[in-house]
Length: 159
Image (tube, rainbow, N blue to C red; front, top):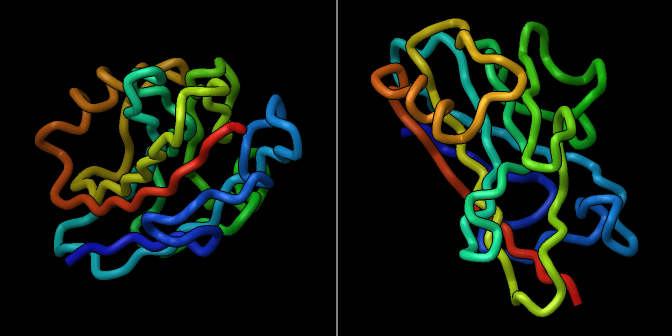
């Protein structure tokens, strides 16, 4: 069974401020580290998303990566926007309209927000997606191509 773990924070735990967006005091916008194992037979690539489903955030996309090669089993901390991202993986625009990772920056007073990281095991090597693909289009595109998924959630509150 496909599993996903984060080396930067625990599932169900608080996301440290260093991973928050630059607009947050102390935020360094460092992309977290992820590792996965046990992809199902037939997996040809992976895609990763981090989405904030809180009602105030309305499925705000913090990170989209597609075309992660099958042989990869991890993304290192700080990989977004660097040569640490495995070739030919591609980052797409996030909801900040920035390429790559955009860390948590929930509105003050809106409480703790969940940041759901989901890894999709796909039966295709590449996804034909534009850099400005919306979450709904991403989900439609992987429909029928996703053969397994694994998720974990971190939480962040802006105080």
